[in-house]
Image 1 (tube, rainbow, N blue to C red):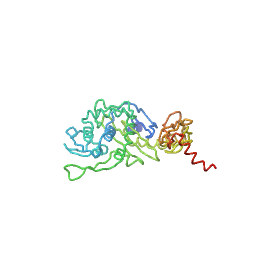
Image 2 (cartoon, rainbow, N blue to C red; image 1 turned 120 degrees about the horizontal axis):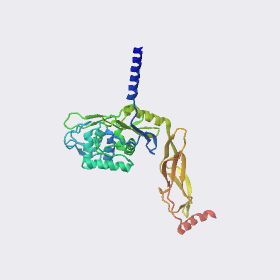
Image 3 (cartoon, rainbow, N blue to C red; image 1 turned 90 degrees about the horizontal axis):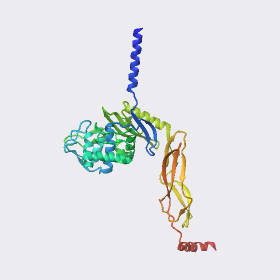
Image 4 (tube, one colour; image 1 turned 135 degrees about the horizontal axis):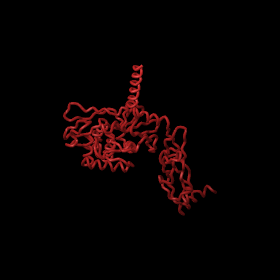
Length: 367
């Protein structure tokens, strides 16, 4: 009997240990890229260390402020930085774009410092710029003290803020190109061969539609991951912080997002919304079109409301491309997005001369 009880206790301990090993993230979020709509969140606003997911902002700022072809020199502060590295030698030079590959694929801390000093003049100034840029994006609880994410005081973010930063970064073509690359080579001064960089983000090879973004790990932060995937025109972005099963959890969140949400388009870019009368114009009406797709994610089997805000008429002199109204999508009382509605053509004011000219043209037809 004692042996049976002991066996059951061992089995229970093994089961408990297995469950613990698959613990969910301390903090997590999943959003849709185009609108920023939150599809899932759990403790998403808690300030936590984020390890090398810091480098998403490092890369964004470098791309926004720098020239990809500019030469970046590894100074004494970049040489020998602890942790993951692309093994820059003192004084070694790469282009900014090459440094960015080293930063985002191999998670090179030395590349992060080299980039920071190149863009900001110093690590301290670059971190100030990082924090300021995060505030511009809408981050409310993010502070950067390093460009790489090694443990430091006053260096933290939230899953929500990370998703916002990644959303902004993915608007940059060079960023998308880099973070979706699984393998790259870089020159290596003083070696007869190139550096070979393998992306640490396993989702790129295991999850259909994955397009990035960045891994991170320190003992203090645990395993952190910012991730994104695109299917059927819908891009989802997520972040998990302090997550033992980071890739598995990310895949589960993405699966839930793609399986339970759909992107619906109520108006396509350039699609005519209606004709609006023009007062005293050379034409009696102007065609109004959507500036871009009026589309948003909604739960399956759901359909948002389309709200048009347009005047009853327009004065003459309206110009092509001029905003004359808006189209908004609302789902379950939540405003998802608002898109400008624009004039498809210009309509000049009707003058006495124009009226005479028109009369001269039409008079023979009336006889």
